[in-house]
Length: 576
Image 1 (cartoon, rainbow, N blue to C red):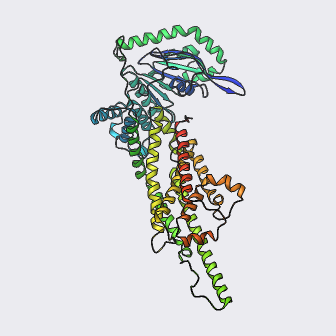
Image 2 (cartoon, helix red, strand yellow):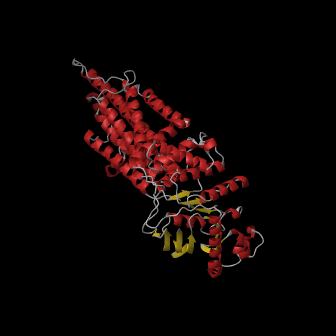
Image 3 (cartoon, helix red, strand yellow):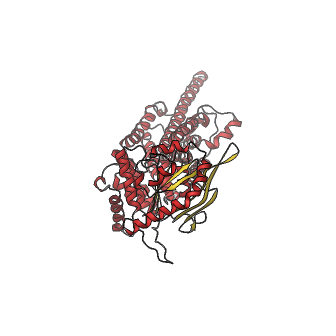
């Protein structure tokens, strides 16, 4: 049984506390199907989220089978929550979506147990015939069924549905309501459905009407029009506006006992007729809950799913290949001037002082040109890899935030989720960075004469640091657009603040330098050059270079800070 005792949820508005849910008291038995209705802004979804535990009640108590939920929350498998938005990835099929949900939420004994759960969810929601169909081609009603199926894999005892019929045609809406009605009749499951529609109310066991956060009515659907003194249910919302919510609440409290008795009589009749199945629980026994898989199991499921989504998104695959192929080619196209050998003075001493001075000046000019070109090409590489890093991860978490929050609510470990992202992005970073290093160091392109391994290492660190920082940004932002914009700004400031083109004032330089990964990658790569080329670069730059150990330390710190921010963002609740 679910029991609400004077439950309130308040927010602060203009310095005052305002109750969005105001002293709601209900007793909802097992196997009950209830609709939560009311005008827009009356607190329907807020109440549902308060029951689910997304909103912490500011007053009253929530009891589940006698257990105080403020002290002992729901087990992830006990509760199913179907939000308004789609919780499946478009590139996956229906079967793959349900399989992933099962692997993330249920610790199965073997493959047969896994398949049985998937088949049961498909059958219960009527999706067996379209199990191999991609999510992106499903209709609105089919996507709602899929959302229900993904919740049913753990056999939840309480199923909460938030506007799952909104935007559907009348036939699809009725089909979904009938499906919810059927699900409530099995295994003593409680189903609560928030809806703005007043159609098909006869399929519910009871109707809860809210007005400004207060209970205006709770009773059988056939008593609704009588209670509000209207001829048709469509007249109820206008009728609510004729009196303050306090009056409706006071009126309801007077009639509450009588209407609850009618609900109980209806329930008893359904059980006698066999329409309602409520398994008995003997005293001292507890229902066995489905166990949540380990973080390692969830990590493997998430990583497998991420690669599957990646390869099915042809646009993303093409973009990654285009970036990997085109960016190194761009570097090679601009490397001609840097590819010239560094001239040195002749060992033969000139007898004419004027000729010797001209030769020294010519060699110096050629060396400075080569040094400027080499420095520019290396910075060009670094900036391009920074762009790759930004493209890799700016939308990685923010772009699927709602789905992630829903899966986290269902028992997904944030650590497993973040680890799967890091593993996926590491593959991209290594492939991009090594290909850049190998391509631009080919004999017919290379302007570099130095330690290839060290240069490749700094390119790898540059990409990794920007990928990690942008992943942190993605985890902290609510939308993919915000994350992308901030990441682009971050990359844009790398070049001017690195000091590679124009040296910054010393006071500014020491403040900004620790945060600029482009500087540390560029500086470390310069130090990896052969002596002659290193000296050529130092002839044309006024920015002080740092030793390689310092560069590696700072770039490693960037990666660590980025991952720490990403972990904080992944742990933080950001469900709208």
